[in-house]
Amino acid sequence: MATLLRGEVRAILQPAGTAQYEGAYCPKGVPFHEVRRGPFDGKADIVVRPDADSSLPKHMTFGDGRVVYEYDGRDKKGRAVYRYAPRLSPSHRAVMDGVAEVYAEHALKQAR
Image 1 (cartoon, rainbow, N blue to C red):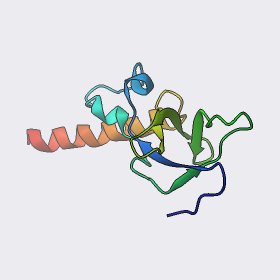
Image 2: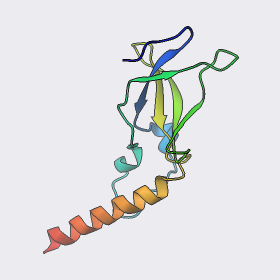
Image 3: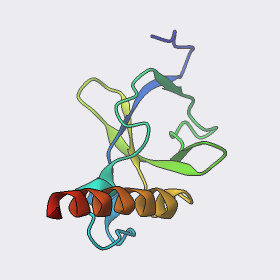
Image 4: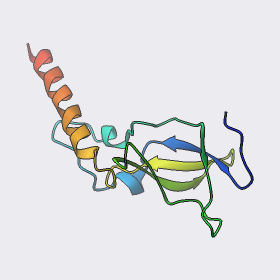
């Protein structure tokens, strides 16, 4: 676990909530719950530095900005909760298209 410097806050990455995934791309044949899943969900060894006005950053990006997590308040442990934001993540469509291929292959195997 990382050592906190003055003002820093521990953070955790979580799957998207309704506010983040509503209206997000979901290809035909893919259950909508797959849209909620982000590539870094559950990661909890993250530290966030507040902005100059002491508020926490609204977004956290990974992979050269291709994956975006959005601030969603604090949990019971006082950690900042960032939720996967599929509508803001440039890589989301490509990932979902890949997931759709996997579901389609699985459906073909089940049909045999």
